[in-house]
Image 1 (cartoon, one colour):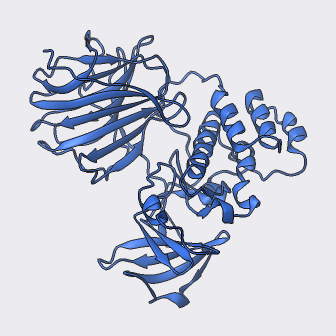
Image 2 (image 1 turned 90 degrees about the vertical axis):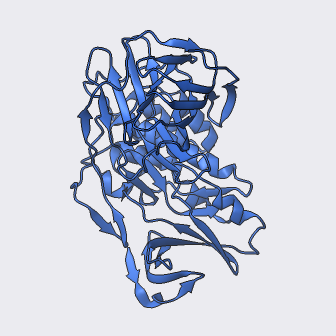
Image 3 (image 1 turned 120 degrees about the horizontal axis):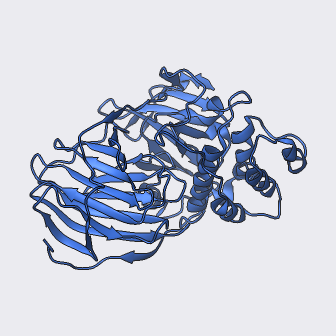
Length: 435
């Protein structure tokens, strides 16, 4: 990384340049908006005119593993992406031969990043990224890719780095020589992942081929006393400043709290939920799921004054729940509850705005087997959208369970089946208040 402030003072539309940072084989521009807030600008060169509509496509592209795009500027034969400051550290600084990533976490990160590349390919004007570890920013267990490019304009080496990613995660090293032969000597790597690495380096396999294989790969999960415990990165916990962005690991605190999820109750089973008013904070309701299938839970909610609300995925054997708990002040917390034990609430993102009483919100929980839960909270208008990553459910959920304080209205609850590419089915409908 090299800093070059010779461009300081220049403007990109309303953004004033503070510094230019040469990072990896690209550059980031550190700038400020008219309010003095810091932003990052990423230039993408075009070899011809900017395609019509691409600005709107990228503005509306909201992906959990791509650096957020707040605005898009068109200038000559290039576009400029406007990003907020990012929290995290480059993957290349977190993994090395002395500190390889544990196999289960490595497989999880690998799947998510390959899915991200497929999602970029599927844009109206296909885009791509590189999975070079220097281009992956990790915020705890959550990766973001930083630099993007148009697929037709990027050299093969740029978007073929995904083949080396899993090997790097598990060894901390760049591949050298015939990996398909040498990987068999890595006995500390599970055989399932050795086969997956070999498939990555087989030129006959496409990205989609390897993603399908990765999705079907399963590693036996070890017994865990605390499933919320994350792999700790081999770096100091102190904040690290890199190319003008605040980069660092923020550890969360887990606190046992009062009962937010009642697993002892017998839930009142519903077929569908629409305009459902909660009048009894002790009453528990459920909506059945197909056990263990990927699913998106979408709830539209208006919280009552000083009232809490719980939305959780629950497994039957053993009885265990994972989800979100909104406390009486509207704070959104991740929830884990094992039958017979105290619940654990986890403030994963302290900057998430509270769910205000009387306002309509959309809550989403996305579940994939062996993946962390991904939760989105936003106002019904789409404003103040915030996505955060939660714990990894150990058991396969069989139903979604909810309960809330008097006066809380659940306008709608949907369980949408997912596959690797998106929605395939949804359970939805109209039901009156059944209480």
